[in-house]
Image (cartoon, rainbow, N blue to C red):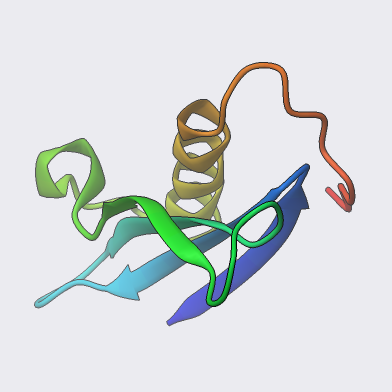
Length: 85
């Protein structure tokens, strides 16, 4: 398993490349609102089998797809806080 996280305004994107049964990797993402909410962070988007469970050949491709899906789930007016790609 390979994971990456990135802050994007009030949100945090958690992307994952999960080992698929047999071979390859599945892309997964969770987007949480971590600022501007009272109490605990709130999950605003979650998909543990992006692209209908498509198996990616390598972890890097699955992770890139997951992080991009997370960015699309964040409201458009939000500006990334930390981008290290």
